[in-house]
Image (tube, rainbow, N blue to C red; front, side, top):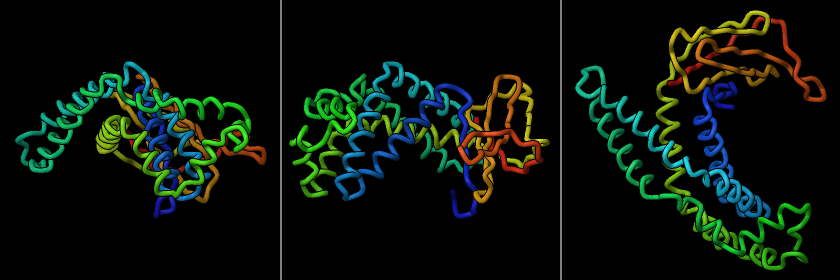
Length: 255
């Protein structure tokens, strides 16, 4: 929820953006837990670190990021020389993309390698798959590590995550440019349903703002012809039920 009292829902319109959003969430989770001082938070940061190592292990992730960055660079280059565009800001954006492309090109599958090659981290990871498997009597070394000063644990966590930094910057830059391409409008769903013909346009991300005081939940599906938004409400058991009421909401389409 933001300061305006609205809650934002984001729905990817393709698998690449879906992966970028998942990575963004995992990086945010790791950073939040890592920034805390509690041993429990740093134990949770280890779990987020393992998830990040898995999510960044895809062999095609680097090439997908490079392709998306290059596409965004070509889009920005078409704005060069236009009087209605801040050329200084445009040059800065192009320089940032160029630097990120160079850094991403160099990782060559090494993203997360430090984590995967650390025997102790892999042991912790294996034990975490067992309910209660990381108790102090099962893993006294983990118990010792969690008893160390918070600053020491944080420094080690950040060191292990360092090999993921380039991927993190590339994902953040890609998503920033995608969100910056958004067009926004007020929409009205009739009987809980909203349809928008694509009319030959291709979008990568749908963003929906709802009143945080309402329990309405949007669900989105899209193809190259149509975007559908269906609103539902959960019952006391959190099972969703489609509503028949009219719904006003803000829709942002990116890409």
